[in-house]
Amino acid sequence: MPNPAMQHHCSQCNMSFKWLWKLKEHERKHTGEKPFQCSQCGNRFSRSHDLKSHERTHTGEKPHNCSQCGKLFSHLGNLNKHKRIHSGEKPYPCSHCGKNFRLSGNLKTHERTHTGEKPYHCSLCGKDFTKLGNLKDHEKKHTGEKPYHCSNCGKRFSTSSDLKKHEMTHTGEKSYHCSQCGNSFLRSHDLKSHERTHTGEKPHSCPQCGKCFLHLGNLNKHKKIHSGEKPYPCSHCGKFFRSLDNMREHEKTHTGKKLYHCALCGKRYSRSHDLKSHKRKHTGEENTQLHTQGKNHTIGPSVERI
Image 1 (cartoon, rainbow, N blue to C red):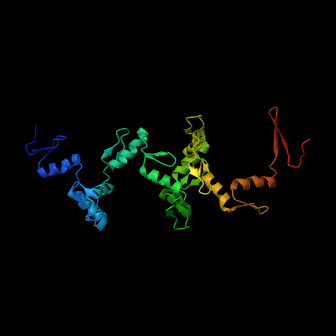
Image 2: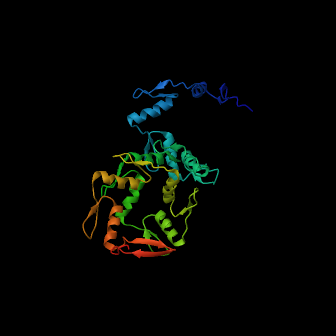
């Protein structure tokens, strides 16, 4: 039965309103009209309330404070979201697995783990991401930007998560222990990866060739062999590489820096791979393998071929 108090009706979508001004405000959503303009930056808004909220970004005013912890907010909506941290309220359930979330945005991001949707696309290498933040972090690998620095040693990182992982190396705290061998780890993720060396589990398989890997990162590197993808260009000569580490190793050949030195003879190299090859001359591993009739015959460095 129609509510007699809701006497103002929208001709576009049949929504009804008690007050005429609310109807007029609503109709601007259909027309796209934005009569309220910010005097600071020129941005326009359909409602005066939205303009007032926006103006606080210029003035810095935060009129809404949390009664629990005193934190201040410029918008009432943000305060209400924050309050759920204290109350533990999670009103947004996932329709796939039932997990509950505090924010509708967090629910949408989570649901992509079920649907496989990756709406954020890197324009440089074509890689897709479920979260905008992950795309932003990824793009820093292309630009070389490292805005996060360690207060202990000054080392810089492209993402805050990489910085946090690094900072644990300074505290030395290793609270995750392997029940099989007693090794300890800084992160639970590292412990889980390590435990696979005991179980032999390789949960990540290549859909192209079926090869299995302990770690997802190794699978992703392997996939580039099939795709031919080389997203990391050298800033000096433009040569492309499959992995960031390979690109960095290559760039050392341009800079002339020789960070790797032989402890036995002092010879220096720009790449770790070249140092390893050189060390074999000292150890005698630089032997020639002859493969005949399924048997290996080793000819040492001092043996001449007849």
